[in-house]
Amino acid sequence: MKDGIHPEYRQVVFQDTSTDFSFLTRSTIETRDTTTWEDGNEYPLAKVELSSASHPFFTGQMKIVDTAGRVERFEKRYGQRRRQQS
Image (cartoon, rainbow, N blue to C red; front, top):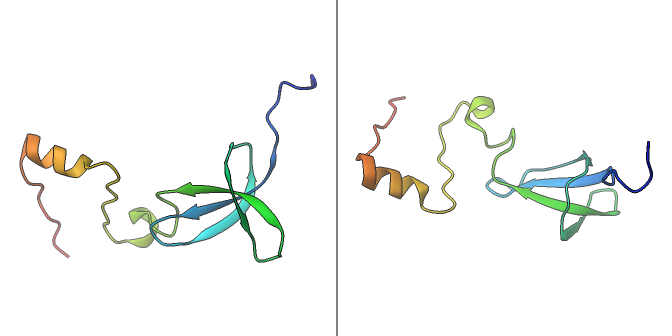
């Protein structure tokens, strides 16, 4: 491999912002934030909106994550969405 052309592959903490679930894994993602993990070491922090702790496929519950008013714009344009019955 050539030197200087590959991103740094390192330990990164990913935090699900909707559930506060966090996990430590390796990644090349660039981050500005850092956090202290359970082992006392400081790692880069990547915040994500969905993870296995909040995704409907894994939880079995429907949940809408709306970060920029997308649901409201959709409903305004196409009408109200139908609710699923449990």
